[in-house]
Amino acid sequence: MPDLTVRLECVFNEVQIARRFVGEGRVLDVGSDHGMLACHCLEKNIADSVVCTDIHESPARRSSRLLSDYGFDSRSSVLVTDGLDGVKILPGDIIVIAGMGGLNIIDILTRMTASADARVLPKIAIVLQSQKSANLVREFVCAKGFDIQGESVCNDRNLYYSIMRLTYTGESTKLSDKELYYGPRLLEQQGDETVRKYFRHLDEVYAVRSRSDKRIRALIEGRIANAD
Ligand SMILES: C[S@@+](CC[C@H](N)C(=O)[O-])C[C@H]1O[C@@H](n2cnc3c(N)ncnc32)[C@H](O)[C@@H]1O
Image 1 (tube, rainbow, N blue to C red):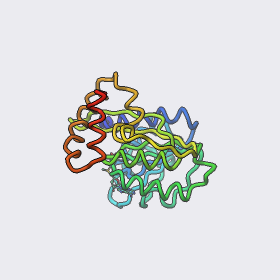
Image 2: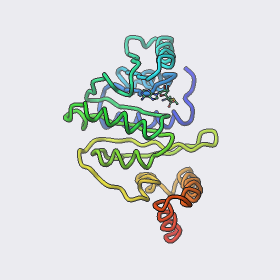
Image 3: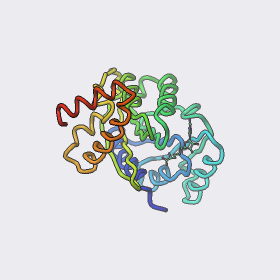
């Protein structure tokens, strides 16, 4: 099986950690495209079975083909659907949404949380890697009663990606702007070289955005004042 990219390897690591918290079960790979992540989860026995979903037929076919090529037909299903529409969430599920925009992720999770059995939510985990708007995703999931248990960051071919791992407590929380924009668990890892470089990268991105965004300007000024 081909190696995962650095980004997907980082997502996969978080799935492995999540598995320790939710016991045995499935991996639901939302927007699976090529199906690589799902295949690796089956190969490494991180999932009993996988459900891949994709909103488009052609990527769904790609996932089906890969799973079939590696002999995983009996442990996998592939659906053409929007997010998790039509998928019943079960205890032990780890939902993975990677490589999508933050607003799309929020939309998918809004429908998932509205339709899922509330008793099942504390028994699942979620791993998210948004391409943008991670601050909005963090704000949304914390308001919805999820706890950001872990976060990691990687650099893949000169691009940074942050990944968050969630469990459900049912208790809505509000993060500070610094936590929303930098990541509450990443702020605890500033001794890590990759995290430090990622924060320097974010500082540069936010410095540009601060010209037209007062909230970000206040955040950057606070960081400069506290030199943190
Ligand atoms: C950039 S690819 C990411 C693939 C893979 N998850 C990864 O991280 O490498 C995004 C995939 O998500 C699918 N997608 C976008 N919006 C979706 C939605 N609302 N529900 C399901 N799939 C979606 C796209 O068709 C595409 O195959």
